[in-house]
Amino acid sequence: MKDKITISDIENRLCDLDTEYREALAHCLMNRKYLSDSPLRLEMGTEKQQAELERVWNNPLTAKQIKEIMNDISKEMSGDFQYGSFNGIKNYYMRVANEMIKGKER
Image (tube, rainbow, N blue to C red):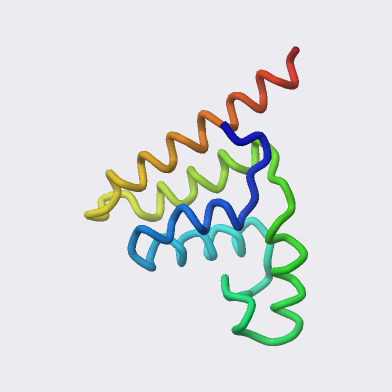
């Protein structure tokens, strides 16, 4: 199991699902003030948006941040026809977050 998770990792796992899941990730990142108003693709947006995204894209997330992001996407996409597939992704990241917490307790 991976011990460092980034926004890039999460976005890549969501690529198998409809675009709405990546949009839910972007919405979550803006709501949580990781980004002010930035697309999830570096080739789009203004220079400011691109710089902002580059700053957070590959930084390791804490267990708390992973859980918050997964829960936010889950709330936004609940009831979607692909939610079952997303739930597998969410469960994976929740396990990783819990392992990260256990690792710190040792």
